[in-house]
Image: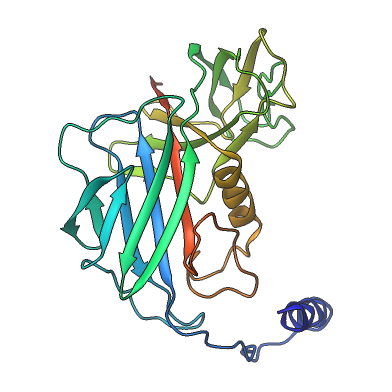
Length: 280
């Protein structure tokens, strides 16, 4: 793996210095099919799930195959197959704050396990919006603020405020979507925002501006979820992957971290959820 990663860095440097129109493919090993686990326990009613699939070759254009015949249990509760690789518990099901959740998957003669803690989220105090002309910078704020700088498009900056009383380190991630008159755009895993309260002020109101300006008529949605350290590092590593990667689970040049034990890849996480919508 070290030799492979070194080769990738060398090739990247060559491509940067020399203009080349020829398609180049690295001779990456095909490690065969590996189980992919994507699981989340949530405090939102009946949204907890485990999704199972298998890896494909890094250069493959095939659809990732799903798995529907595994035995999946969380804290002893059976998660039943709903098709398309999705396993869910019987309704009603709600995750409980400060609870450790243990996942056990039995599939094709192998056992895979994971464990995660459901941490509490902070509450959102309020949400504001301010109109800025083209070229202006955002309002910013203590402990977060906006990206600022000139050259931004005309539109509304959306800023939210919160007070974090949780004992550090606590981790949060946020995904952002927008509803226009035509479509809903969801930036999950492409433009995700990560927050660590070890580097922000506690027991003090903090503000953060969403990372763009929005036109009049849009509705902006932000979903904030607590997560443990493993999920935080997983998302952080994903953001460092190249922007043209085929997908997070098509065998990449450098593997993502995982908290799944037994030879699978992916993640098992638990979250408390807060969200807001702001019409502009």
